[in-house]
Length: 337
Ligand code: 13P
Image (cartoon, rainbow, N blue to C red; front, side, top):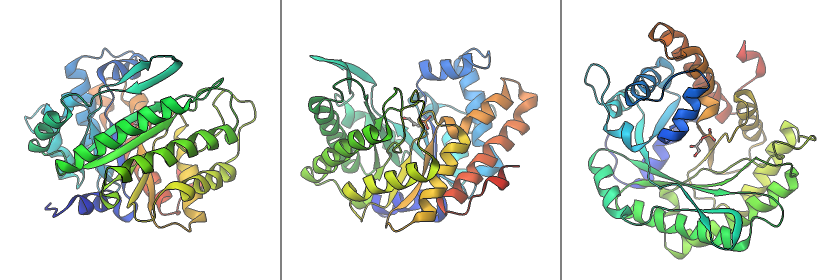
């Protein structure tokens, strides 16, 4: 696959309803996922699990990009094939998470800033030489008593702007991820407000640095009720409020918006995406960059046993297809059986 510009790369990833498989869990996060199935998080087990995922038949045609953690970009399958080549063989592009995680912000209790700008340019040069075509940086925003503060939003969105510029200068598409967490008992309107403030500040930060919007992908949360709120907004309300929020702040020429799943069930994440695409009326491709909502059924089927690989691959293939259909507004709950 030959690309002449980052704009072509961004367009390719979300073409024809395709989305992104987020498989960039850091080793501690992967450890948590493996704990849930009683599997030890060793380098070999992480390799075997991801090799199994990347060999799934249903990757082809449904997944346009896979986000990797540093370890995985360097790893080879059991037969010696680089894992990143398995991804290319499926018609998808390898990408890389490049931030270095979260650090508390002085004087802002309960809030964090994402770090990793130090040495970023050198890391990006190496990743590009290894074939990574896109990158991801995740900022995390909490909703709670008096938060998010303007300071937290500002420092995180400035860092996202710096990162995005640096990724483009190295010929890679930046995925900018300002994740407003679902954790808490806040209302959907609180989520709408916090997400609006983040997106507003983020696009000012990108434009200030002359980041090429046509070579950028946005990975936002959907606008939902807090996960501990006893009154959960229904699918239609989530879809409409998410579109309203995006339309207010996201430039029309952004090629793709690929949502994170953020702890939604796999079916909810698909149903919400489908509902938005059925409503329509926007220029961007509205697609997925799910971690848990794509992997959870496969992880449960796998259980660390090679003899379960086929079932696990069928589970991932099914979710990939369901989400591709949702990206085209062609999903229906009856397809889940
Ligand atoms: P989830 O879909 O599990 O939220 O993960 C996506 C991701 O990459 C978070 O950074």
